[in-house]
Image (cartoon, rainbow, N blue to C red):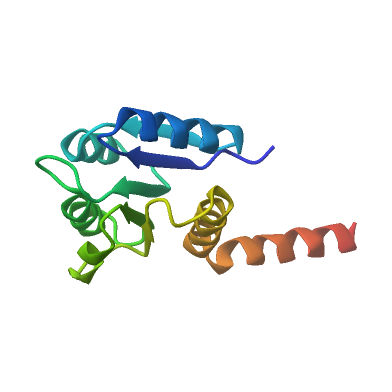
Length: 139
């Protein structure tokens, strides 16, 4: 059984956070849910996060600042930023993907997450599969 990937999910709207958490958990992800950027950064620093999914507009420490802080600690960690304010995307951000709220299907979000997690793993996984295939052929 493959290990679950861990997603740090951040939104100050409890209902949106809860819906995303359930959607991701039913797809086999482990989810750490946080209601603020400060809380999320503390959780991220504990380690074990494979991807960050954050709302942009939050009181205090917004999603863009959160992604900046996370990318400073771990540049290879993929981050998805979403917002109801499409124009905000004009600001410079270090997010790997930007999604406008309400303008994407849950299936699109899940596919973006899957692609970013595969990209994060990189060629290492393909290499280990080739090694395993080689061992099976030699047996």
